[in-house]
Image 1 (spheres, rainbow, N blue to C red):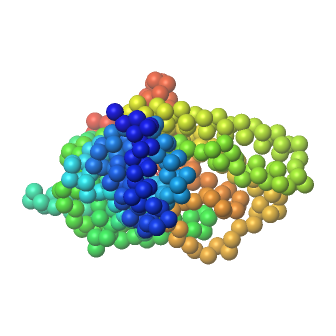
Image 2 (image 1 turned 30 degrees about the horizontal axis):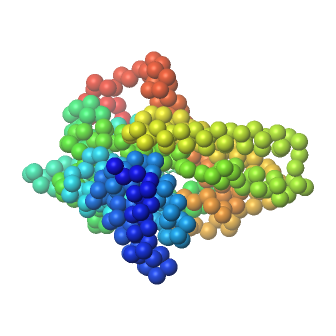
Image 3 (image 1 turned 60 degrees about the vertical axis):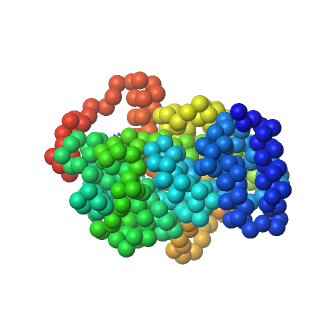
Length: 394
Ligand SMILES: Cc1cc2nc3c(=O)[nH]c(=O)nc-3n(C[C@H](O)[C@H](O)[C@H](O)COP(=O)(O)OP(=O)(O)OC[C@H]3O[C@@H](n4cnc5c(N)ncnc54)[C@H](O)[C@@H]3O)c2cc1C
């Protein structure tokens, strides 16, 4: 059994063999992965040691104290938070060995080709087709939308329809798609912030080898549940120090700019401060629950709370700053690699937080999930669950 003392010993060994000050960043990250100290709960040989997930904090603290580089988790959030757990659960040994190391080190960025113009909340209705050629490659045609980071991604997790003759949830298969394939065209989608961190992706005759299928043919919906449950935890359940998250900038402005204070803003700030703290502690609880297994629908509750709070707090910040809060940049179109709130002005946070109640499942749809799968309330009527996908009204 690998305990905290053993992990400290192994971390010290890693640091002695690869002193951070004199080691290339990528070389250090590769060595950390190979030492099983990347994500300690993953199996040996795949960046982990099969240790309890809760012990990751021990390794992280030792490495941070030694000034070791990290893998810039925000840049590779889709890979770490969504693709990796899915590859781990459903991938073959070969797929795990091929994909997980460069995913974790950040050498290869991942994106998520799930949503389509006609299938967002009703994701199982998706129409992108994958047809197998004589028992060989799959050929994929269709259009995906809102694909964050597609413009910098090497790989995508992709779900496509492989059998239109069965009901929508049953005819889907899950693939890993090479974003450098000539049939993949990525076009920017400009957001309310003026930036384009996400894209439309057109897939035309994209060839995917069967070796890049994750899970069984037709079982893609089940595989996708692993991705989606992990996505909600990744969005709503980030580890934050007190005042380190959403409420941080508003609390700082309040302290540093007494001339902006009013009684009403004070009341609202205090209320949101308390809610942010409750949300932070609940996320901590959820992470502890994760130690016992895969995330379940409870992650939906966390993501709901995060979206509402981030929007309310960024709204308060804009009000608190008065005219200054309305200032924003020059609207030059930029292509950030990923969303990043750190160091951005209140106006940016206000505009970008609008997407929080849509991405990773809309608030309405997540409320349905909590109602049905957490609280056990009666389900919505579903008239299409026994109808072949090809016969559905579109
Ligand atoms: C910033 C951002 C990043 C994103 N990144 C990605 C990505 O990387 N990859 C990817 O695949 N997708 C991504 N998405 C897409 C996102 O998952 C979808 O936008 C979302 O699932 C909603 O789908 P839709 O936009 O088609 O809206 P629709 O499904 O058309 O919904 C429209 C409205 O109807 C409501 N509604 C729909 N069904 C129900 C119901 N059953 N009950 C009650 N209300 C309902 C919705 O809540 C919403 O208000 C991203 C979205 C955003 C905003």
